[in-house]
Image 1 (cartoon, rainbow over the protein chains, first blue to last red):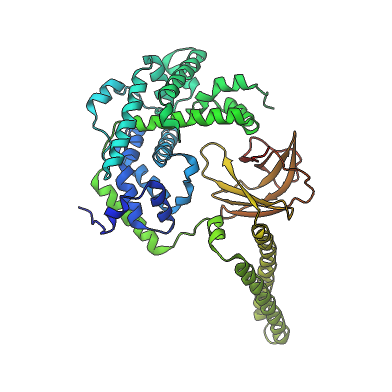
Image 2 (spheres, chains in turn green, red):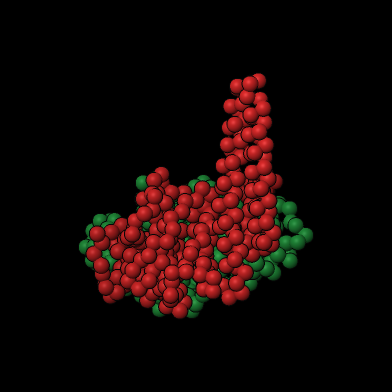
Length: 199
Length: 277
């Protein structure tokens, strides 16, 4: 059981940008609050890609300590904090996979299966939990509406860290077909997720 | 040489690039193109934002409880060890600049006086101890070097103070290439004909390389100043008195030292487009 600072309830009222500003002042309670909000998301994004709990834990540690050491690496012009953070996590995890020369099979659950089996993200902040759950549901639904081959191609690129050429070889499909699937799939996602992109 | 592609061809490739799945040749073509094409840059931003949302679709797993304690303990240890400094431009905004510049001036004077005293001492002891003389001369030399460095810094900072003291000075945030965490702000005073580049988080360069600042004026790229950074920050001032109009943009590239090239090695490492152009 971790120690709870008497200030923590107050910190939960602060938004992400305000907490990040406090990190510049070396505020450990702000750091702890951000960890409580986003550690599950960072861990999950890393785990989805590296498929190894120990490596995923190391990445969570590395990413949060990097934020602690250099909070100014995030600015609001980079978009929503949650999106930026998960993006950083994804990129770091893909770098790890690529550096180890490992390629993971991404026989992941379909979006419909994911939707059934999953609770929403859990954080210390009920409003944030609700927002992330809604957002996640929207994204999973948008993915589930894609033709299976488009979704598979996009996921191999984004979560598998494969280039289009590598996907072409993996699926034994012409490179042009892979590019077309990515383009069409991303166009549909963009249309479906437009409200989320307004940041 | 990268063959130029038109907007339509580039847009066909943007989604693959946004997913980090384009090959290096395509990536380079896209980066060259978007550095000069605002519409494709915007298109790419939307595509990257869409890609970033995919990370939120993952199945949520809870990290083990011990991880929080491990991370917080490490953070606490680091906090006790060394306070992190705010980036240069935040300190710039908070600190009394004229006083800082004055302090640098005082340090210069003190350093010069001390180096002079040391040299005087060296002369007096010359016959007594050759070994000691060598050591003291080295110390005096170091003081003189420090003094010269401080004088250069003082000149740079006086120029920055001068720009900031213009109530109508303007500022432009530059965009980094890809996922770089580098940050740079270009601030300038039209009235005083001076500009300054302030940056943080710059990656260390390979030996023999320098950063180079360019102004994009119409179809031409005008080299401004090369610089290096030992700690990831920069504060580089520029004389803009030759300019008669606001340029289209300002960019930073990585070039071979000493940075006397007249053609930028694109793609831009960082680029900012002036709002009025």
